[in-house]
Image 1 (cartoon, one colour):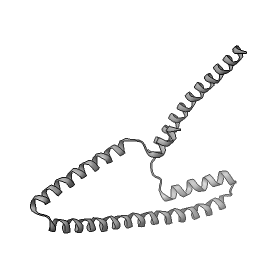
Image 2 (cartoon, rainbow, N blue to C red):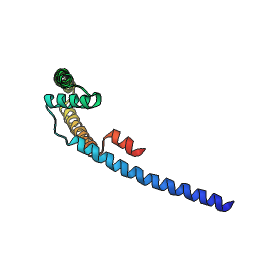
Image 3 (cartoon, rainbow, N blue to C red):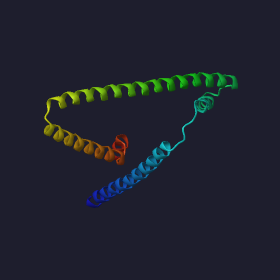
Image 4 (tube, one colour):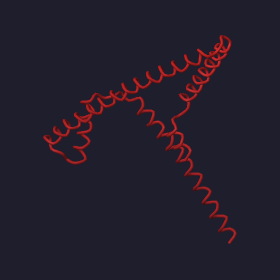
Length: 154
């Protein structure tokens, strides 16, 4: 009985160890695929529409006429999305400029109340905070993306 329990325990331990090694290999492969995706060249709107239409053609066995119509529909959708993204980027820039102006006005109001010595201390404090923020941003760029980290932690 003891031999049987020992054998079963040993087998379970062996399977667990081999599964852990397979997981590491698949994680490395997934990481390589993600890196490859990031390094891809951006396709034009026409190329993306062609790719999408071709994918549907293989999945649904579309005729050439259907593929051409779907390509045109996809091209319209892609152009609309690109325009929406451009508008969002412009709106974000505008909001950033508004916040920047608001912060500048706020700082000017505070500076009007302070003495010269207090202003220099505040300026030094602000510079220190900027340095800390730059360091945090640098650290953030060096570490992997949060989604990648959570997948690796599984």
